[in-house]
Length: 262
Image (cartoon, rainbow, N blue to C red; front, side):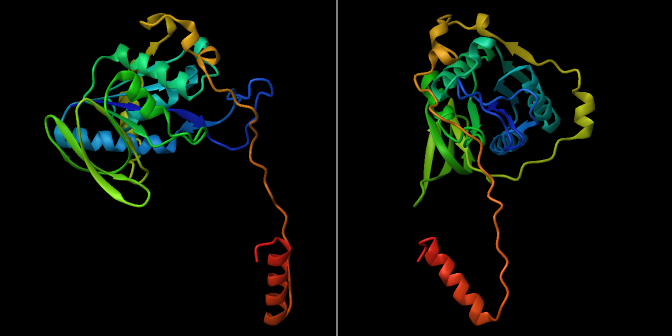
């Protein structure tokens, strides 16, 4: 089975600046980590390989420092990795990002299964995976909770439909986005870190793409623009009350009425 996992490097903190003109997160100099949801997709791929054989590749889109998450994937057991990176891709919205990654996937060959995390912690749109599948012309299922059965031509999965759990069978090649806790992600291996420290990471840039229309990438290819973005504000206000149980109960009720909760 040929499996591709899409991973992303995201900020490791909520304390991050925003470009006031473009509305894009300023990632330079910010501590980063692998998107937590992608760890579940990686673990799913690794277990499928253990059970059915094959190879696992990862693809990421980002600046050169995003190689770090590919190195981490190598430490978990991934065979090959590629980074889609070019200044022309900066500022992409979900549509331009999906198209860019789909073009990168085409450069890596064909796959039976493409796995994505449900969403990213810096965007939370949960749109990139399904949009990639549309650009690649393959079927997809989102919110996968469990993999029931895999055969030579298809995969049977459970998916979370908010109020129900549905079972669906989908033919290869296909794309799945997986929920958190589908499997417990394994820890990176220090032994694999040493053995893969010189393993190549393929760099894919704009010049490698079949589609050379610059208006489909980056800010130029983004039909949506962020009107306003800001880091979450921290509310540290607190009050300490003392008194009898009856007095404290009365204070709580008064406070709830003050905030119009009751």
